[in-house]
Image (tube, rainbow, N blue to C red; front, side):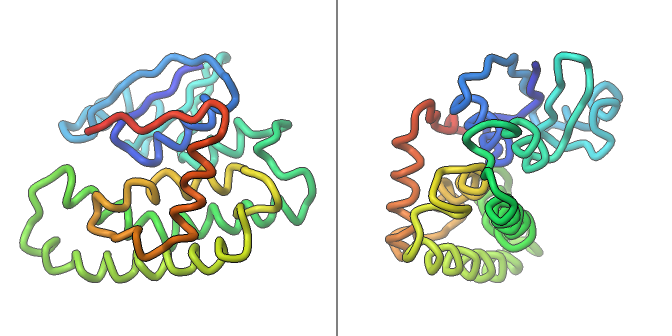
Length: 200
């Protein structure tokens, strides 16, 4: 099994974290998204969308999209809720992450941490941060009453949301305003097989 990835990516870190939690061996193949390495003909043959991560299975299939990879890897493991309601809750939060969380928190982080912002991006940054804080507030409200996002156990819903939440400070978000999120981050970081994101 191979993972095509960029280790500064929260989307990639989600997958690496689950693989580590599972104790699954794999080969990591790094692609630098900052210099166009995901837009070569070789990479686009694996994922026409030109994005990481991409999981390459032992039989040569290629699966892009971080949350789809999480779902695939979690099948028949403790990280997939066992009942239909729990699985629906996992999907609910994974869709929330991709639609209401990642487009704001991850983008603000990318602009501030990886690139020189354009004048247009500087204008848009405050809106990204406002929308990101709205997502964090929704998470905070949930976590004030629950330890985890899909049932009573750590699952792929938590892993999906952890990827960019734990580095939200790099996007200008103050996690000190969200004590329940901070406690949740510590719960995840105490799990067996936890790995930190490599610094970039």
